[in-house]
Length: 129
Image (cartoon, rainbow, N blue to C red):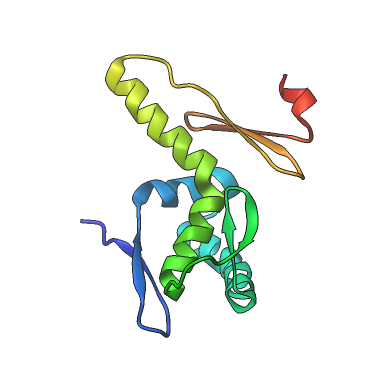
């Protein structure tokens, strides 16, 4: 049986990471969880020190008190959000016997299109349309 993945911090806080997030780290970056978390940790740490958090809208001020683990989970979710949504929609479509929809993530640097386990990256939205 596979052990759950948890992130733990010096303030004693910890959070369990859902399997779909681990799968999305692999899909989006081609990294296993440990490699992904190592990559993301420095950015999460930097945001924490600044009193900021990564959201679906970008970097914002923390509006509420939170533990280090809660902060990290918010940042990680924001980073993997489009892929997580794609995987969940894929699961729903499978239950309904339908083809899963594409999920398009647009950032200032690129556009990523998720369709099931297929991920394509583009330099601009014009390439997708």
